[in-house]
Length: 162
Image (tube, rainbow, N blue to C red):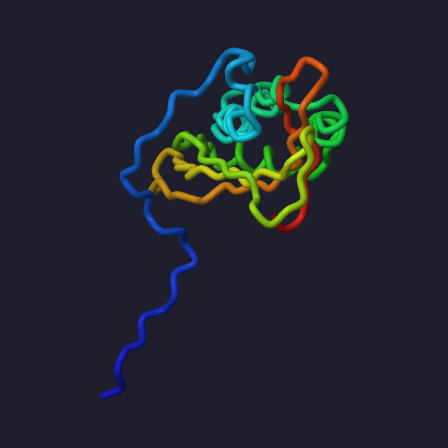
């Protein structure tokens, strides 16, 4: 008798039991933008969750208040074909997601100045859809975070490494 070898599943693992954060509905506050880490957390907390019933680009719009204008211009979902394709797939699958509170750390290896640092920010996103098992994915971003003339920190461009 030939032993049966289990096949690797292409389905994502089931979602862990993790505490999910409320979805912020207000602009990032001065308190949230007071440090590079908290600015990155405010940005990801607004962008990470999504609901297929919401208008296209809603989560990106929530995150815009924690971004510098140049970064927003490059990241705006409304002008990004890849974002549109991803959103169309999300709507077709009827997926929604909530996220854990983000964690953030200034990259210890990266160069920094008093007005620019590189921050690594992450959260666990739990994605669900009707009739399917919820699954978790890690959302991680490495971004330049910039201090503005108002002394508040905001998300800049994505960067490689950390």
